[in-house]
Image 1: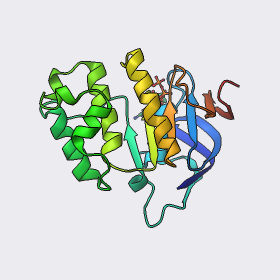
Image 2: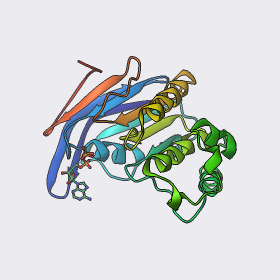
Image 3: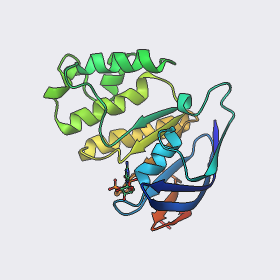
Image 4: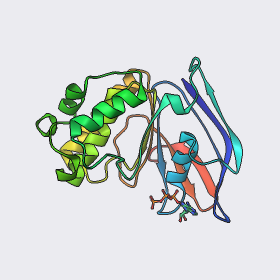
Length: 208
Ligand SMILES: Nc1ncnc2c1ncn2[C@@H]1O[C@H](COP(=O)(O)OP(=O)(O)OP(=O)(O)O)[C@@H](O)[C@H]1O
């Protein structure tokens, strides 16, 4: 799939949060979204995910067959959107059934995030970092080309951050696209970077 975003503007409440944001993403690309607290990073992901209407601008999807943009993406938010009373395994089975396009079996996805041993534990019993890893395992149980990740390293220790980087790079190698907001370096190779400033969005290479 390809995504072409042109001249996007976002309002929240009565306020214009950002304007003039444009970028294009092709298979294998990664886009890192930076900016201070409240700049509008999560709002940009909300717009891409179809949860928020842009004030203006266009989002064009191509090379995605019959699928709409929401059907092409995984979205992992600040909150992990896991059901606390269900086990890790049940949460992932639900996601796998709900999302369609099944990819890794649930136990293989748990293994990939190092939590196979926690398969039968209610998510409420897990630590914040472990819950984050279960949320990330959702990326693996259903095949979706676009990953929208809101501060994906939050609560992750160094080893888990390395694991996440491996998952993201593997996804890119397989032709997927990653869009991630972050306050910390993610280590993605040749990533594009957008820095959302007050009412201004600029596009540059990561580290520019
Ligand atoms: N539902 C809402 N109604 C009104 N304003 C909102 C709403 N949601 C967010 N905002 C405002 O929009 C602005 C952008 O919020 P957003 O969550 O996109 O920022 P962010 O860059 O992701 O911040 P952070 O780094 O703290 O996660 C903030 O000023 C926030 O208060």
